[in-house]
Length: 277
Ligand SMILES: C[S@@+](CC[C@H](N)C(=O)[O-])C[C@H]1O[C@@H](n2cnc3c(N)ncnc32)[C@H](O)[C@@H]1O
Image 1 (cartoon, protein in one colour):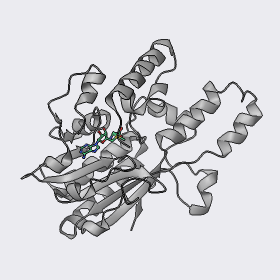
Image 2: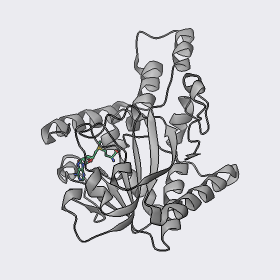
Image 3: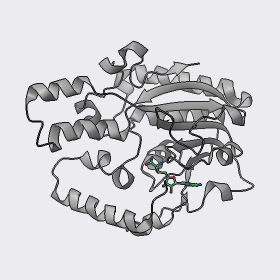
């Protein structure tokens, strides 16, 4: 369901209007994710996991964020991998957002990239109806992808990479922007839900629908496992864990690092907990 540029411009004006009237920092990331955030939510630990995987695959890793939008996530990755690049099919979004396109974001479709390879590709949220997996798969040995549980991405409803010769290494769960958006709407923007008791009941229903899957070809599988394990070990040292300022919203909405959500308890998975295959 790719967007039309005039619809995007209209939405962008609404976003500008929202931020000029809002005194709630970071809410825009979870209300207008295409303009001020990402479709998946992330913390610093996600950045460190991905960059440690890339460093385990190569001593001079190359990294591409496919469909990177305006580059919010990529910018954080580049703090640790300064050569990381993005590929974004809709170069027009920079015109619509009145932003200069950074030279590390290539305005092209992944299908058009030839004679290049990367150590790691990141695919953050393919829109339903869009499926460029085979074009990513031919360029790399390691793919990290995020998508909404239910697997509605792609023409064939799949966001996975086994059919392209990859094996899943590990996965973890985080909230999607919609999960956070729902909590913010209940708390701040719904006029009908005023009582504290009602709000408390609603927070008990909160869930987290975004999955992160790590895929590797056999030639780098062990390095990817080692990179992710070393990252998880660093995270356990809480004192060495950094935070992005917008993580405060995730905490406020009850999506803490290692939170055990009541709605997920039968699946025994905590948010951001890495499960190796
Ligand atoms: C849902 S947005 C996600 C943007 C960003 N990764 C995020 O999570 O906020 C998907 C992006 O992929 C881009 N895209 C779609 N097909 C593409 C392709 N074949 N090559 C490169 N980018 C593509 C779209 O233009 C859009 O910006």
